[in-house]
Image (cartoon, rainbow, N blue to C red):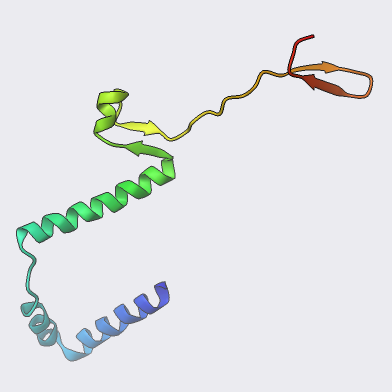
Length: 102
């Protein structure tokens, strides 16, 4: 995936260098900028993607609503499982475990 992208960038750079600066300047003059709302949406989308990747890596959920319920911005996704109590005893053959202490 990276190879075609790097190749495309290398070809575009070589074309700009060999064609002179005028072709690059003309190409930049024809670019239509995004309106302010479009720029804000693009930045917001980028930040959301980065936040999602960080949350997955850290195994946490970060949300302003967590401040109300838990008092912290980020809450761990770890949910402990309920374990049944087990009593184990040494025997001649090894270790035997039971659900009762007797």
